[in-house]
Length: 274
Image (cartoon, rainbow, N blue to C red):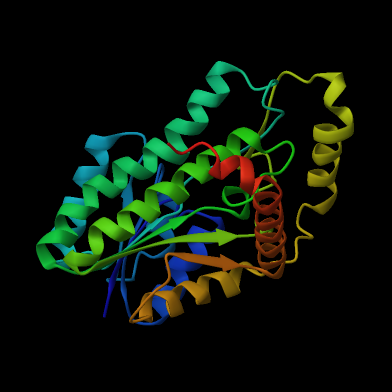
């Protein structure tokens, strides 16, 4: 039996991961800004602890982690799932929109991770799963600011994997493609208030696409939740786990592009050493 600590557990991926972990007989600490719906839904479930957590509040994160350990004795898997999207050209995004995006998607992940890791270090075991995006591996027009937060999560997770390995703790960054969740709904996706006409061909096209494909994405969210159970069971988990055929195709295309561009500019790249 494992104990899971899941952020953003009220809906989307988070809610499905909660259900999947409970179905296996695991303990789950489900956190969200307002856990009242979770409390009502799982009122008769002793293996679920629903707690309020705004991931941008580091003190609240420490309190939630401590309460989880008091209730279940340990935290085995941390799933940093809370976050939201910002659809905007880089120039269109306001300072407030950018700061708020980083506050949740990056600083929130760091706050919760710092709160949970002392408990994992004491037990010399654990697995940190950071939910990124294919946009954290390969950029898309209209997702520059959002993608940059996920690029940050990729780098943080890579470093953590190295730092934590000697302590018996794993770190994996999970890279979903386009999954059929409510990510493109207004509750999860913010669109910049400022719209610049010059970007209509690129970012405007992405805005229209986001509207058209909402709830028609290729990825099955239930299968993602099941994939995380396989990841939790892995004796030697990967540092990166791409999920979705669109993600795999995009990674392969990005890798080909980087290889080809490196070959083209290799001579200049090597010329700068002493």
